Length: 393
Ligand SMILES: Cc1ncc(COP(=O)(O)O)c(C=O)c1O
Image (cartoon, rainbow, N blue to C red; front, top):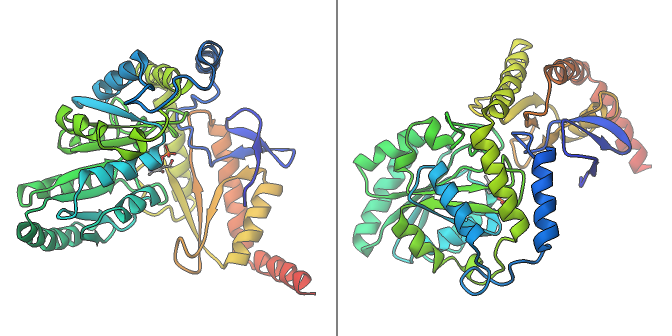
């Protein structure tokens, strides 16, 4: 818990004084530690400090560069307009809050990220969940929602994600959009993991699935591919004009500081002008996912860079396994156990980036084979039992 990874953000960092291969950093394109990117951050810090601009966007926190970034982002994701958010989490919560009133109904994927769940919590009206990526379940809930919306003279907001960050599955946006022929609703998509990694230009899951135009409100954060802080919403001009006067987390909070605005402009430029970064990312993703499958690992149904590895074991076994992985194999990746996933399952969640090498992949595959063997031959069970016994003494 609360591990401290030290040193420059990259494929190899320090953990407890020792170099580890890192597979848990969302710096997909490897922008975080590039000299030319850090030079822009440093110049912005020297020119503006950390404070500028002061105040909320509507009041005194607005600049030409905020506008420029919005224009470049909306062009990049092929929408009429965009609006910056100082944090993604609060921003999308406010977007959900602003997009619905009490007579409207929200229908959302049950596996949506915590920020969406919290946004839905702000809603004063009805909400229905649909089973994860289950279009039949969505359709059933849209039928219920449509009846209610007609009675109440309200509308329907459907919410899904471009990529579900735990299991790596893309949201079935194409199928969801197809339902617009049968039902009347607006679609909000959180594309935190898809932006910069999916689609021919990196514009995300909507571009990848050929349905970007049918996403009514598109959200992405700068905290992953853009290796910064901040986020944005993109939509038709009319929607953005409405949102910028109604997003409480932006109207009543300080705007994105210039360091991050200038930094995001540079990173977006890198995204557009350096396609080889995304190509390298995918070379690593493909090598890792193919290698794991060839060795018989269960990587579920990922269709993105997020690479889950599912193993069978208890929580104490998981703890012994991750300790072995970190201390003896020098590999650092996130581990997820019950209650986030069902009891008896261990999920090792890996995030390949453009900074990884094929050698890193090969080392990791060997380490994973070794830990699986120790899990299956009971080594971790014995180790965890010894730890529990020592703790109880
Ligand atoms: C799917 C998803 N949505 C939203 C967020 C929140 O974005 P931010 O870190 O910009 O607050 C995250 C995490 O970063 C995320 O994974």
